Image 1 (cartoon, one colour):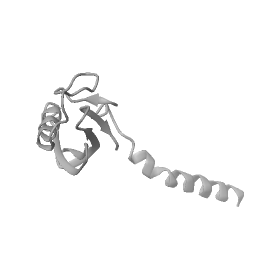
Image 2 (image 1 turned 180 degrees about the vertical axis):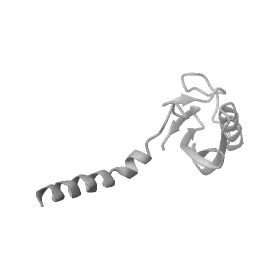
Image 3 (image 1 turned 45 degrees about the horizontal axis):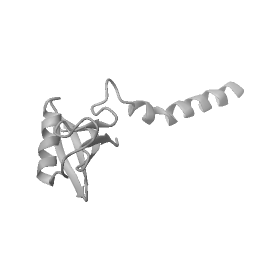
Length: 107
């Protein structure tokens, strides 16, 4: 009887952690930590704050080179939140800073 309880406890903990294991990212990240837009300098200095349309074009150019699509979610102040998709599946969610050109993954 004691072995049955141990077996059930181990099974419970394995099933409890299953969603975390399935959500584990594989391979290289889509957006390296703290990457920047090529339209600005490497140190996050744009001459002026990009318009929403320029920022959209910059994100599309950046991810198109990687074979990915961009879907804008929200435009709020100097930040734009966007979903990065591959074959209609969301693989990353990013925040784009229009003032510095920084791209940060929040996924």
